[in-house]
Length: 192
Image (cartoon, rainbow, N blue to C red; front, side, top):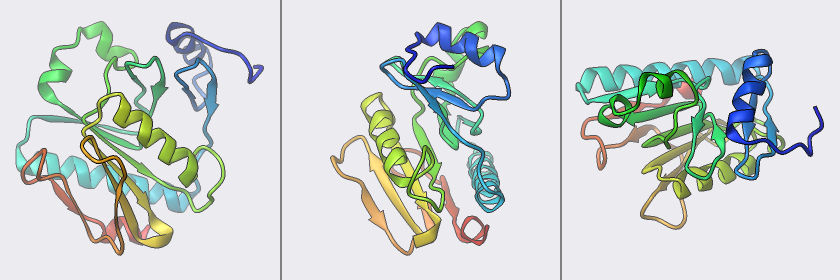
């Protein structure tokens, strides 16, 4: 496909259905964003991260839905992005129709989590992920966590703050201001 091609969210969904092996996202201007598979160390960290967040949500009994990195969210600006882990309030999820839940979810998650790859370059590098965090915040995300394993650091992006807060070394992620009791320890994530 030509990379200067511009697609609507509906066209993008059709392209994804016709190319299930492709890992793509869609920018608000309709440009395709090709993402690449992660290395095994990043994949193991991502699996641990998703599992820990899912377990923390279940343990607290909070009415939240947790999604993995395969889930596409159709944001209000028209982009379709896939955070590594995302959390949506259950009442927002159940308000969607069955058809909306089957396709790209037409909302911005309440919490987005992305894990940076060791390389600064490409769609999984820090520069690209910081741009994604800005897009999530502009589209309504209340909280974003950008994990930087090489530095044992986390950037915390909130709706209220213009710039992210940086924790280093980060040992715990805590969403208590939004979701009391929702916190995870990062030792298993950092271990890879």
